[in-house]
Image 1 (cartoon, rainbow over the protein chains, first blue to last red):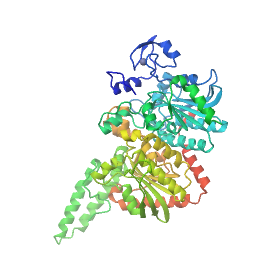
Image 2: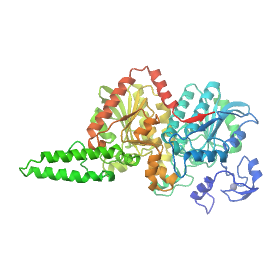
Image 3: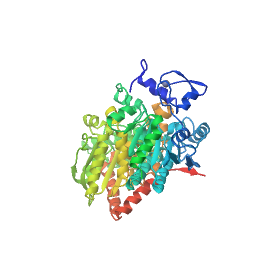
Image 4: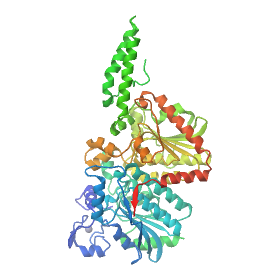
Length: 281
Length: 326
Ligand SMILES: [Zn+2]
């Protein structure tokens, strides 16, 4: 990864955390700081026209970008989280869920369904970074699991676009067990020779990277996405040393052998289709 | 002389402080009796009774945070103690065949009761040198890969797998990330879910996050009474949600991380009782309880046909989760 001169790696990570494209006609790119026209960004699949920075996008936008027009049919949209633990931090989890739902217009951090990518039928699950940092609780775990099962039942390839800070703390071990649940169901898909294409976007960390995201038969990642088990800050505090340039970024993982390809957002549809033609049923 | 429930190490738990005075008095009386003719048996017995009563009272309403402290007590039996006490003829096996031999993960053949099995266990280390080598019980990817490689060996020879969990979490470091910590843990869960031999897991101390679950996808999962098991450590949770590590106590309560809580959530199947005042007061008795549960569970699991066993294991994890659906 090449760094923008004069900005530390930490600045860039922090800028990326601000999430979705801000309101207004014009916006400042968090990576190159250029003022860019919003419509241009949107037409460019939410990629900066100046520096190619891939903005974080919501699950609906992602599904629309990947699928052939009007072909995506959402499933299990009525599934909603509950506060099984009675978890209260700065505010009650119950209240947080209501607020997040109002903010994002959907009940949790994943949208799943059937769709077509360049005419090829797929089961698609897209995580949404806008809902509690895309964290995985029972709903995300259950919907991803059902997506895997649907892929098995319908003999379609499974595509999951990950975007998550990890397991959701407010559901504690229930969240943790979603890692085992999704991994175990993927083992079943593997047993019947199903194809799972895992697409990693910025960020894919914690319990999501350490379960289904890293279990793809083929793993693609968007450029410069943060991908790892532990967060960079936790690592920096533990090892008490400067993290290397580009550490935990897609290109670094490619070099270390943990992903198959780094793919620009505009090429995702064609790359996924190409892999399906080789490995799909 | 030590009594069954008096920890004799130097480490103090703050909430046990009221016991210290009694313990000092008992020790004084006992040393006094050695050089005098006065019979003090009755007095000592009385003091010991109050000690036991107080201990019972303290442990009866131990909060989540104090449970975490008991789970981390330096005198608490570690996996290596469990192996020494319960395993006959432990034959340690080293190395992951890819990169190295992580001392934070111990693997080897053993006999537990009448069962030949493979033991996979987190290792925290006993002295400073060992603790540093084991990163205080935080395994690297090579540890998880070593565990998997040995579990595959167990599968090949039809040996059941026993895993002992005691980790604050998988190691968050540069090398760990570069060698694929996330992938290693994910691969373990994936393969354990379909391993064609019985698997039993016991959280014997700390059950920290994916680092714990990476060797805990089992047919039966138990926690020792004062162990903790959670998606994140209380300190980690406090730092993120409360923005200060000092809120660890609140986080511990909120995370519902005790054995009793996890039983309610059906994330574990059984809580294994510990001696009064925690396993550190009587490690052998604590380990005997663990051994009993393992032997019993393996005896039951061996009766299942393999396909049935693997299906039930899958279903055990498949049904976990709490949500509503309209
Ligand atoms: Zn830019």
